[in-house]
Image (cartoon, rainbow, N blue to C red):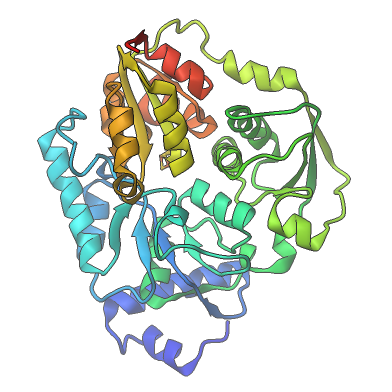
Length: 394
Ligand code: F3S
């Protein structure tokens, strides 16, 4: 792999051990995947934030690093809402460790906004063909597919290395040829809302890590594509998908239709809503996986208007989005639901104390049972709110 004289010096340790380690990781990945060089990236998003998944070894590794990131860099959700952790029932010992992790990242110049939707935040508005180094799988999918930016599905250490060096190795989804669809998914029915999360949940299992192109009966919104991509990345390992006539590269490149076909029928989507249907009434309802957009907060605020919820309900979103729309937060919380920031139902240990959960996310449906050992049921946003047990006060 070609390195510039400056990169060679970094590799030799001239700029300190942390940068040396970082470029070593990038070069090692580049060598494994056949990259020709390092390329500049516009921003980084770093996974490996929740103390639940990192533990003490991860905290120690980050604490030992020195220097400052060279590009706008941001964190994935942590294990708790930084302000409301007590309300979530988080153990103080966990909270202390979580704060230490966040402070260690802050020391490196990383913005401590913990979200899987950096594309809603100022400074992270990537565009078609931009190169970035993001790591949370739904953010990767959204950036690659809905925006047409270019990122591999980075691990925590490789995203952090890219942030420190300001570059990544030029392989995988940074290259035109890796972005071509190889399998066609033909959806034979019209879909709306949470049907897209269900579609991703179904198709991800078959597609694995390949690049699919969808042929749809109707055009999904950006929020619906966000749900589709998150579920595809969780039940499979899809980092990039296209939708014929909709997503930017499918429109620009007019890809040939791959021969391998996967048909999807309405019955398969309906089956996802049947998962764990024996849970007649779950203990908690969580929405906002991936974190809610302003439009999704608005939709929830309208649905809960004049109602009092009887059960615990979390509406997860990025803190910056919540702070931009205090009126929406107020309207949602008036119903008794909690707007939860910096974290989510999968990465927070607060979920583990429940035995059953209702979600409107294919990604949460795939991960909550394995990562939290909680039985999960799938529902539309309207049914999630019904499940929360509504008293109409209007
Ligand atoms: Fe985001 Fe957590 Fe879902 S990180 S995509 S809300 S599992």
